[in-house]
Length: 195
Image 1: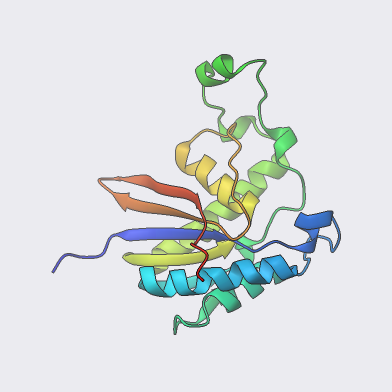
Image 2: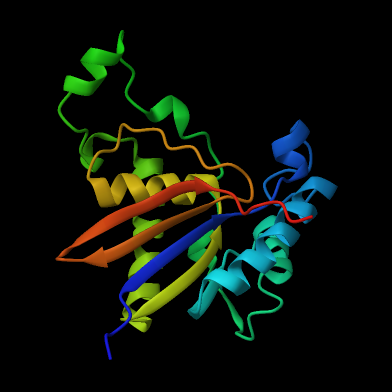
């Protein structure tokens, strides 16, 4: 029997009030649309995956998304404080270019060249995923978190801290470990809307 590879399914929380209109602060609740996005995730997760473990940020929008979407999965949700969203804007810290070709030709930006606040956040994200992976050497791991955490995880894996990564609310990104490297299987996937 073939061993199941290590996979990370990173899910961004459903729409929050802060996403929608800037209210609610860092720990804002889900909107009605955010609750619906979490509900849409549930049958897709249950039908298409067999998870080894489930993790979530403890912030309300991620926690509620996890509780709704993972209700049928028969696994406990493990809350990790290091999966929390950052409390500052990352976008302005990213390198900017005058045109798309120069951006493509630029040497990847090393973590050491970033502001201290970003370096600290990246270290927290790295620590969270190192702990999760160390506790689960095989299987598909479901992680409910935030856009900044997902994009920073990807920048760390790719070794280039100038790329902006977008994740829609309620979307999933699948990464698979194999042949000594991470494979990005898909990004920003949303479950089908069932009748």
